[in-house]
Length: 398
Image 1 (cartoon, rainbow, N blue to C red):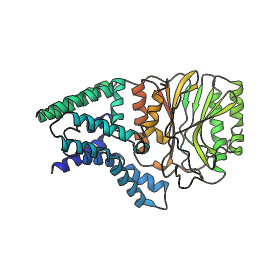
Image 2 (image 1 turned 135 degrees about the vertical axis):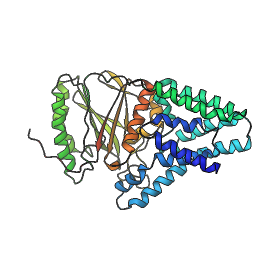
Image 3 (image 1 turned 90 degrees about the vertical axis):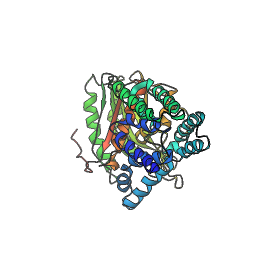
Image 4 (image 1 turned 180 degrees about the vertical axis):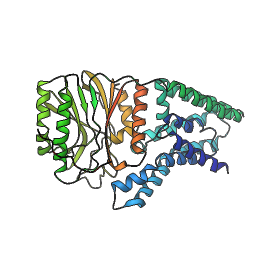
């Protein structure tokens, strides 16, 4: 029965933490010294947090439907919980020592962040600690030390009280709002769903071009951010449709447009933001696209590029260092850690969540993005394309 309690506790933590109260995810870390089975607790946590994969996968791969969604859901929970087996093994071998608890926590954290698990490791419980800002991870480690000492020296009844106290303190700290965005930064939210047909990117481009030019006509607008891959592939026809915006920035050097597009690269493509500024277009590629749906090395044709390692520099936007995270990267930990080497002053998010309609995935994505912004104490802006409609708007008159 105690094994079942670990599983149930993990399920409850994952369910209440994501997406609305990610700070509660730290309970999985703080309760590790107490759980009977850390693996079952972690399995339950990832299973309940990632339940949106069932519907999202079925939407993205309609030919496979519900079955593939169930496979991805269960497989991801099984795999992401694997590092916790090391913690279980250490405690079974050294049941009354302090060191194995710390070794287990370090092992779990490192394996969860680094490849290969780092490429699929979303809803990392450490992200919940970022809600309290730069002090969050330190507070979790200090509380973890206290709970380990209580557990090893036999004061088991105090451990839950410590967890409750830490959670209460975190909620008090998390009331601090994020810094305000710089003046003149605008995000455009769209509801175009999946682009269908060869002409859809051109039609969408004409529509969005008019919207962007209207925003840029306001001299107080400095930066306009659009969703990920909103205009599809960046081909000559698409580039021509956006030429008026490119020309506009040539004569309005204080203004910048960040446009999501798929940029052909070799036999595949790069999922990127296009920085349109001063009459030039600069490609800002992502590093880690979604495995299976976007990155499929077994079929490099039309596969997104994957660059797991390597330092990502913040880019200059409106005179500020800006870090950017494109869609799936917002859910992970590895891309964000690479930004830490060049701390940004503004965090930019771009996503295309048409496939996640009716799931909690977009909300988890947004909560994770804001948690990182809190850790760095910087403002955040994000632009998302949702899947509420699949209609293509009419081409506006120029």
